[in-house]
Length: 297
Image (cartoon, rainbow, N blue to C red; front, side):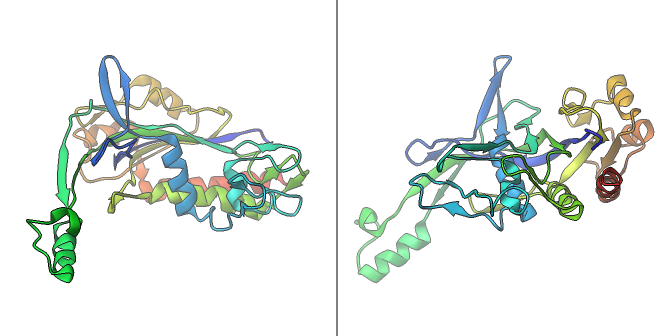
């Protein structure tokens, strides 16, 4: 193999996920830095969404006989032939076996500090129906009818996250000296790319389009989130700096979703010469195929 990685940094307008609730109050997950709080969608949430939407979790098997809820792993079922294990596993049945994930994500962190926007709801219609069925007065016996007001913090904002795939680890399970075919490895990486390209999230019953508005990256020798520190947004303006352009000059790609999502869209086009988001991912998928086919010769 050529010992390379695929790395992407993506800016998307997405919702956050929720932490522990307090009573009937749902609280957005946040991180704290520089004395301010920023809404996030955690890396665990991002990874689960991508594994699910890519279809890589479709063949997930749970080890129900070990007494521990964990992924089922064996000589016959391992990361080379079970796509659900591509995200890594630790199985403690018998001798503990650990296989690290071949790809890594960062938290998706908002660029602007969190401003609390609370939404108030109730299950009034359901409670009215319950009261009618029980022939009781909703106002007098709201508890018996199950009337329940609730509230939650809401956030949908520009967030940045990165994903890096160690191409030489995909489909390889050293615990069993097993390796997927070239075609299977291409499929897995491209399935992850397709999920990132059309990422859709469901939060509290609402569908959230989390597709990339801006994406930069590609295949290179840097096995890290290479663009994480050079992609920044300030007041809806994507910062076009020399470090970003210098890294792009190393052979990486850039994509932009047109639609005035950034106030300086014309500057982005002039300085970075981006392709469309669809073309960006199509070109990258072709690079993935060429990488694996070339490495196998």
